Length: 73
Image (cartoon, rainbow, N blue to C red; front, side, top):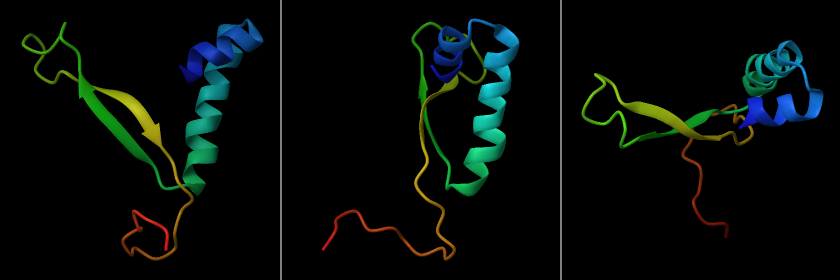
């Protein structure tokens, strides 16, 4: 969706690609990056690896590797 939103905003493929690269290579280096993986019915029994990225979660990067809390207290 990031690519399609950039393409809709800038109306040029090369600019949209550069914006996506900028987001992943520059901005996400400063954050903790998690991918939500899933499968599609179309490729589930056909492809050797049917998993695709269905979402991205990028909380602020923590300097220590302690467990993040699920609930605030």
